[in-house]
Length: 558
Image (tube, rainbow, N blue to C red):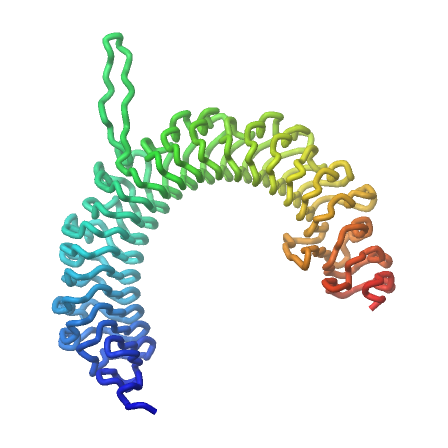
């Protein structure tokens, strides 16, 4: 063994029970400490005291640690009375301070000007002082989420002189309006889960670097948002000599904004002046009841538009509302009041979610221009087989997933594209299956038919023969989706005593089924299953009828 000073537990300046990989690093986390450790080396640069029982920090001990760069005090019980005002005053090298999940009711009055990251999340803070975060030229990230801060407790000059802050997390507090005079270099601003009801004029006027803005779960209404919140006017509306108005020109203030979340607020219409470079726009769970022609026309970079849980009807969506959104590939309109497929769908949309509406029919032209559509969810509407045009899906040559579950279909829709890989039809009224409706679906891997009305004799012989790639199929009594794969991925699951267990006898031939689970199967049902019991074959379950497995050569009747 080497000298004692080489032992990381016995280095000079290493407190009892702590670990000291080097003279500059002291790790005392998770030791159930109730008092600040003594004998900490003055040369320490990184001190970890997280996950202990500390209630106070002694000024005399901290003041000695003039080389300290990182102080981790996460998950203790430190109270504001246990944190002297001058506690960090002499720590001229401190860059990273972590005080999250303690019992602080007010922030430290003064932090060193050298700090880069300050984490005070999950405390009980009601007040921040001007020099807590102010005059910190090197400060980059501030974490104040999960506290009790109001606008009164966050002074106007709280970040004066700290212009380099790029990340600020103020979510889950009690703010009633968007704080003003925030650092101009902000890239990420989290204000979700507050009580914000308004955005003051000019509050975001200098934040041209802002890339992500989170305002979900607040009380924002259109009245609480100034028309110039996201843009500014270059000229006022004027009248020409012929009394024709000159349109207003809007210039985006938030030129870098790519992510904006305004979901779960009280918006009744699309706010004006969104920046053109937004990529992801969350407007779900509001009260939006119309989509006018030009409401989103400026947002040319938009790729994800989420409008679920609003009050949109098909008539309230202008046919040209999506016309200029040439990059839009994901559109969520579920849980609205759509009585039909909305007009003018984005031409390049690849994922369209219009489930949980009131759609009663699908017309010939509803999807005529959505050539790139790969995922379409129409589940839980009011669709009847007779109201789906037989050529409605003719242009969807790239469609891979179609969900029509939870409707009133009695037949599989006609004209489904051969590109389809996943077809969900559970919870309908389907009472028959025939080869001609499935013959074209040679690439189908998953077919979900649970909770329908399939009965003996309602499935035409040969129905399954073309479905060589099918991996998942559900029977009437299967309560949940099945999604398991073997080698090649075939799995069938059947509930004991299912009324449609007989159907499987028509499915075996050429199916390549490799997994079988369940009970209550009829004798002779498995005789033509070639793969079952081979290298990847498996039978799981009980309640098998006499002679059921005897006809399976690969199992040898075992």
